[in-house]
Amino acid sequence: MTIHRTIPSSLRQTITDVAREAALAAGAVARKGFIEASPESLQTQQKAGFFDIVTVSDKAAEKAACDIIWSRLPQSRILGEESGWQGEGDTTWIIDPIDGTSNFASGLPFFCVSIAAYHAGEPVCGIVYDPIRDEIFMASDGKLTLNGEEVKPFLRGRTDREVELLTNAPYEGERPSPAALEAYADLVISFRAVRRLGSCALHLAYAAVGRTAVTYECKFSAWDVAAGIQLVQAGAGQIIAQDSEGRPVDVSEHTLGSIKRLVVAQAGFEYQSSCLSQLMADGNL
Image (cartoon, rainbow, N blue to C red; front, side, top):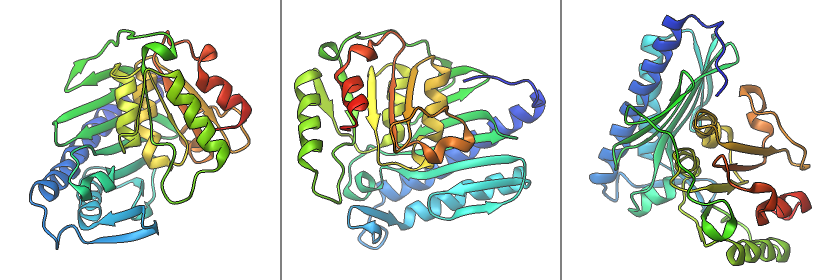
């Protein structure tokens, strides 16, 4: 993550502190909703379809995060998955209160809170918080930390054969095309393993800290990737971002919405020789 010094250090620290507090508050709501689940609390509403749902806890977790931000930094604008854009100010927040809602609603303990903060267009911090494992992945001041301890990832493998790929493809909601199924088959025979874990933000966090060497995503929104991208940048990882036409995208707060295909990988992973590189170049993913 590139650090700009135009933001006063005191403001940068305040934003980071508020982001952490907001993530922990949202995570507490999500954890309580998961642990104390009931038919009433897990009533869902469909958004884009049966495969895209929202629960009471999603909305409550987002409100908990927003309330903290408004109370500490009222001159903020917030993009939340459940509420859209709110507020005005030079500090921007992009929030996914529960990334992995389907896992959450199904009783699978793999979901997280994702919060990214920017000031005047510059990245300040990114946080992915797993409330079940009580793990807080954070990028701030150019450093990548896990539960407050700086992380310096080591490379677990350089080639497809040596590593797992995390991806949520193929995606629910429509029948995969023959080309998409063929591409997925190519991934399955190229990588040591392919895992579909159900949380884009946690996929990126795991790549950032070296729990996996590479991850690929396509059907996502800004709130799914904003914090995770900052984590990968802070961990000196590789980011390959493309728009819907396959053109490279220079990642920033203002271009997040134009990213339609994303690969992140550890430094040292040989992306150019990876099956992913060819599939991306051919437009088959």
